[in-house]
Length: 406
Image 1 (cartoon, rainbow, N blue to C red):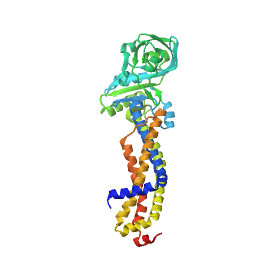
Image 2 (tube, one colour):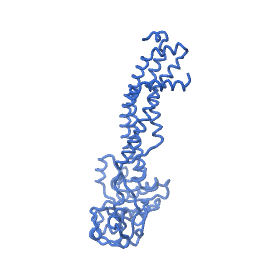
Image 3 (cartoon, rainbow, N blue to C red):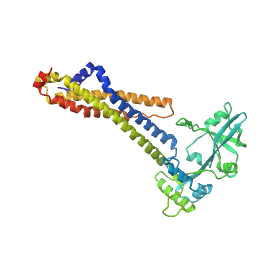
């Protein structure tokens, strides 16, 4: 019997029992749909984090008091007891580092911003060094960024994020205008190109001012972040080791003791997120596997019932020359087609659910061909595994006894 003939016989059998075939597919559909949905969402989250959350370049690392991302609350509590990162730490690294091409610093606060009748409460104020615009890979859309002169003179100049500019200056150019930040008068010298959102939260609601001006207004005892750029991507480990040594010496950390500061890279941030999503993915795999197992058992039972009902048919086929492998192929192909149909519906449903979640929530989805291939492979595997026993049982039936079956 040819493969084409076996497929036609299997399809005829499945179509003749439409309701039974559809009910049999449910377990496979639910399992595959669950798996595809979660994998698509996790892939989307990982890509999103790589592009927007972990926005450090491949040659950039960040020094802070507490980790930028943490999964253990005890680590966060421990970090709060460490000595804070100070502006003098930044100056020390900038002066002594030979492996870093650039070193910058950033601090933040929240305050009221006003322009005429417009005001924004609890706006994010970022105090920055002059080179941070390049380190953070942001672009000035209009005007200019701070100069070293602005920092040395503690100038009352600022740049606006896109959302702040749109809200305070809906119908006029903000460049050259004066606004109030925390009661102080600032000159707007530029705007920053729109950055977009992260999980539905805007990244454009900020005002940038010189870090020295921030210390003058809000004091220097604020959480400080130091950004360092290695001379090359390959030189990143050497630069990190050098900066670690400088800070340990300055902060008098004894040999053998752990660092009392945190160093983050884009790779380490993404790694933490992937660890979290991997654990979530593992739980999903277990749930989907249970559903697929139940679906597989249902398919096996239905196939065994089918073998019982078609015993006489099998006897006739054997009497006219059908071999063991012909009967085996007939029932095995029927089980595989059944699972592939369920898998195809599950893949379409899973991708549809993922896209619906993306449309209704800030959670991103990323459709990859590999995910579709994975769904097809798992469906085929379930069909072969759970269809093999009924197929072998059918192929081993005695033709004489089968012909006598009523």
